[in-house]
Image 1 (cartoon, rainbow, N blue to C red):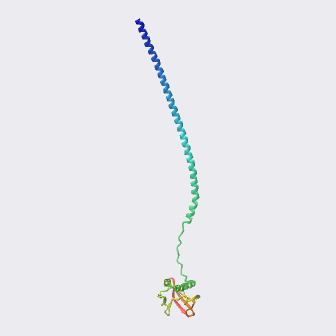
Image 2 (image 1 turned 180 degrees about the vertical axis):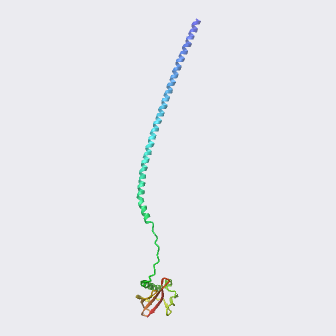
Image 3 (image 1 turned 60 degrees about the vertical axis):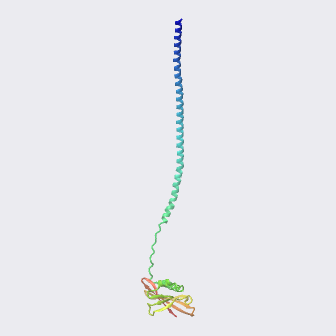
Length: 223
């Protein structure tokens, strides 16, 4: 009986060992299956991420190409605008440089100064009417002086004084004649009427050439 009991215990122990060994491979296989599933899931996730990256890269390239395509028309339009503006700037450059013309002093009319002297005599009379002594001082000769409202003619055959004419004492002024004394001396005759004293007379303006300019040297009245 004891032997049977011992044998039965041994059989039970052996049976227990076999079941333990059989369950261990099953657990290892199950663990391996779980690991394979997780690896497959990770691989799938990685593949999905890679696919998303590819899609994102394609989208970025597309957007960049669209951006470049939008910028190119702007550059072309700006280029065309610059081309259109270029002629205007060239025109302005052509118009902008203006050469300053030097004012040349007009030469004194020595050969035929009559017209200038006729005009000068009229200005002398107008300056007397307006008492413009500044102008009169600028056109009288060195031998002529202005004292108040009268001339003092000293560089003549018969030195004399002459008061300024007014519009009443020398009205209806009209040119009569020129007379050439020499290349440097002219007489310009004007007729006038003295309405105050009621008579007509002639004024002989003598102009002489001094330092290259014509100056009034005398104003003689012939009644």
